[in-house]
Each structure stands twice: as C-alpha cells, then as structure tokens.
Length: 58
Image 1 (cartoon, rainbow, N blue to C red):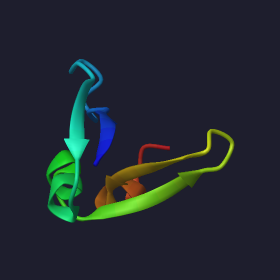
Image 2: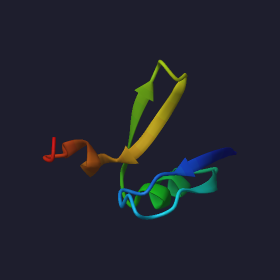
Image 3: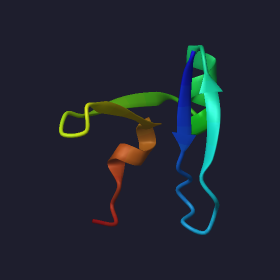
C-alpha cells in the first residue's frame, strides 16, 4: 500500500492524503484513467488523469 498526496486540479481545493492499494484506488484518486509521469529529479512518479496530459492552457 502506498500513501499518496492528492493534488486537486482546482487550486482552491485543499490537498489530501489517501492510501492507494489497487488500480481502482488510483483511478478514483484522479477521476478516470491514469497516466504515470516519472519525475526522476525527485525520485518519484506522478499519476494523473490521462486527459489532463492534453492541457491546452499552456
């Protein structure tokens, strides 16, 4: 089991922690299909909603 930090897309919402044990837990945390984004500088992986990778705001 992994303890994760949930960072909402809405920057006014508070951060929260969750215990993640299964694929369903990760999907529930991101609100859909997940995509892993490696962060080698930090030695960690960020899991995001796969649709979030198609940001048109930047």
